[in-house]
Length: 145
Image (cartoon, rainbow, N blue to C red; front, side, top):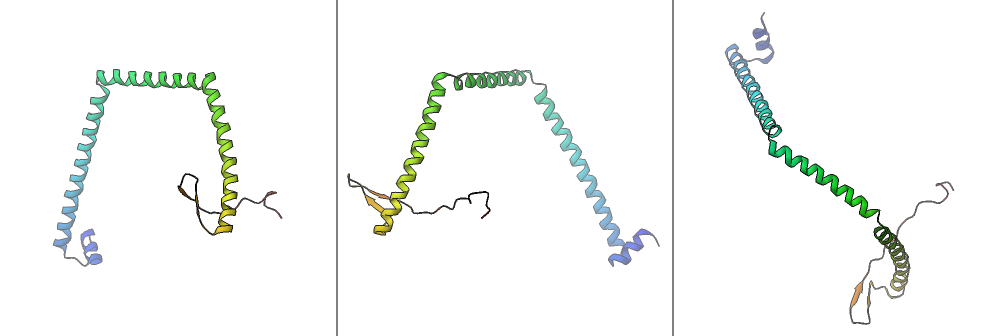
């Protein structure tokens, strides 16, 4: 028994139908292979066009140099006294803000507990809204108690 007959027995398809299907599969796989070869060739051609363009190479080198110059200038600026002073000032201001927000949060919780309201009036007539939330902190002492 040849492969076609074995296939026919397994699939239950007539030999003519199975042969036609196999021929169709072969044609389509050949077409797929051919299209893949054409796509590969076109991709290689596009890469070659880009690789061999002198103007693009010059512009790319200029862009690389500009990126290096920018990195160097940025490093010089971040190492300057003025920048370091501003960084220190920013850190101090952020610390102050964090402390103030923690204190304010505590007062807002107290206000909410006393009034049951999540808004308060300001002296200039505006109304400020706030959220009440709780945050669970990690256990102290490595989690063993």
